[in-house]
Length: 492
Image (cartoon, rainbow, N blue to C red; front, side, top):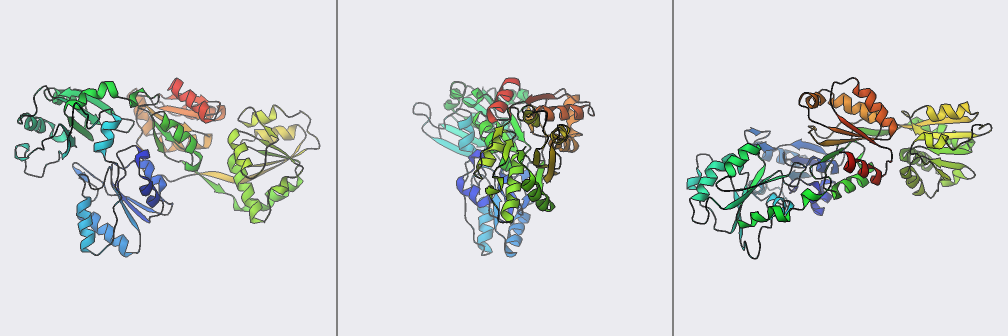
């Protein structure tokens, strides 16, 4: 199956459905890492990619892996960059499977040959400039030279993996009558990703320009008159978050709204959860007793809502347990989570933190009993202040954040924006990347940490005192999508 050219949103609906169900995924280097987040948690993920000069697995080993997993009764997805049958070795793998009597199906993908020019604003055909197009592999068989390779006759040529053999390829093109030193060309580097770059040149200047700009693989070379439209028809560069890669460190199910908003503004979004939320199975009896006694319930997170209702349902109870109680929430997302269970909050804090609750409560709370269904890492501020004001407080830790083992390794890049939503998340981030962050101090490159809320910001600034690094740290006081988008587009 094809994974598409780099933008994870270009995965087909069918491929998405299959990835959610298969037992084993054998994927290549150019597969967008975010696609691995679609796989079920128990799926076996193995990188079997091949780069020039380095093969993590030989083709024979890949064949054997597929066969072994199938013989164990597993469903296997062979996930390839772009389209599986466009200049890959999908055909060879199909022949192997057929020879072993192993059934298979092919799920086409969006080829980089189609998508990358489109993202650069270059049409493959144009009524007045190009009525034919040909796709050519620039990878030569061992021992062959470009002089021995016949080229197709077309108005537009698209060469895959062209930079390794660029000088020989240019000389071969100039040997044909169709092309001259003045023929316009374009080098399309890492198209559809945050690192996308378009270099316009001619056959006479492309080799030197590519060296000056330091472009390397993966890149396409387009040859033909349609490439002159790159400057006038480019569209992606005008999007406000073009060139940014935003790394979402929260759980996937909590990131969908942000993910869609960032992608709509041109960012490449990478899901890289650092924490998972673990339910405290022993909290049920305490939570039920606290709920029965309390006349006021304060939800500080959507997770608190989810786990409390999980406890209620396990005991065949429901929202009627809240009869006669005042319900307060921190944050719009928490209020929305509550509404899914048929309950409207009596009070939504104006500030999206516990201070918003405390600011509106009276200083004398004698006779009041508060129930706080919360995280084991929740700040003590809310409980301590309520007690100081004379209230009885039952704070029950329903869940706790725990460090999550990532599905893939992440290499931080300049211009990355790392989204951190809690101090716990920030601590895991610095523990994991503290050493690699030093590169941004030594090279003077910048990485941006976007903190959600002043508490997270204060935690990050305290952590930064331990590291001699230069980072751009911003924070969004408003955790809504609109609030976060405003901060990123204005300050990053």
